[in-house]
Image 1 (cartoon, rainbow, N blue to C red):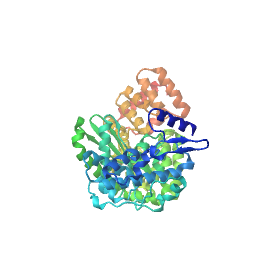
Image 2 (tube, rainbow, N blue to C red):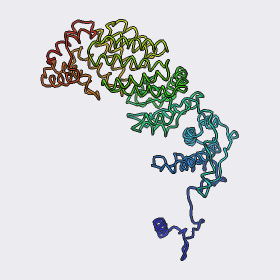
Image 3 (cartoon, rainbow, N blue to C red):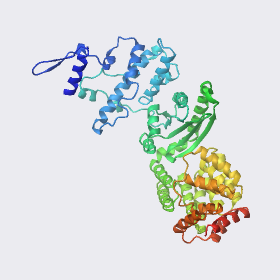
Length: 542
């Protein structure tokens, strides 16, 4: 209080009227000499447009957003935010569209878009977003005058008392773009978000929450905390906008597209691009409606599946076995959950590759799990993908390519299936075609797991691009699975010291490794490619 009084005295000395007077026991407030932004809440007689603009300036953003608020104040903060949202909502409805020019209309739409986070079921806000609301249609929600005492304020508003009819809809968040020209792209993404708000089969998360999720280092936790079912990631380069849609419960890309934009023509093409992206997202929501319903019915199974999938993001035998344990537990909870069955298949063939012992039993189990996934859901691309990989390691290259072609046909933007298709093309002795496919897969999944780079490295090696093979492995976070390939690559480049170093590390992980036994089970259609791999391994000292 002493600090506050001292600051007020300094203002008064600078020429402003001092609102405080003192006697020996009290400090008195002269309210007439004091003005505050709170005054704007009580000016019902003001011009509606002026009042809206003033309120938007003060409360157009989330109250105390970004501050570390003590948990003891969480309930109070929630009520305050709801109170301010009511004030802004009423002011924008009263002002729309009276005397509004283009800039005011855009400000009103932005306010309405922000308010949909608090009032997702509010049809009047939805109409403002599309410019259809007439002034006489405005209905004021009940909101008390700004309370003067905290206890009264705490009991005045109960935002959780009414259950939103949108509560059971899937929630979608559209991430702000990364890359260059983000000012232009951000405006485009805002347009798309406004268009998506018109959809009645999805609840769209407001932009400020989307930005927080994108920037948070633990994005997965925020997605779970906000019950996000789908998220759309966007990035903007000099000549294109890239967007990909992910089904959060399985962390799987269900749609991706790159929109070529010639320089600043994004300004003139915004409407067309907005319609294309909005239409594509709406279509994907309808296609995956069954998956969402299943997720709502079995949330624990999906969480278990996601936990298993995260283990597979690192290439290591312990992680693969942890993933298998998670998938097995998921299938106990939900026996017909096809994604978990396909995940089981992946763990078996990955262990077969990593142990390099030629254990046919692992591949038989992988095939059985993949067929189980296809039987439970014949429209699920991942089942065919795992079957294709398993057939490859069983030596059935043509059967592998056929299964993978079916997987990509079911899901043309399924990066994992395209990656596996690339790997099969490499083993079919078509490494150049494989490199084209794997680069496409990395483009669709820029933050891809290590096995993408592993496949790209193998394709580069068989194309005699040994430096490129090493460069791809450098992008991996875990090198334990590629020491053999690195040893062979360095040996072919004439660097015996590095080749021996990687051979030593490979043998520490698998002391029983034998070149001839391994080459006998690795499916390579062209004998020349098999001999190239043998030459590299022998030069490295295996």
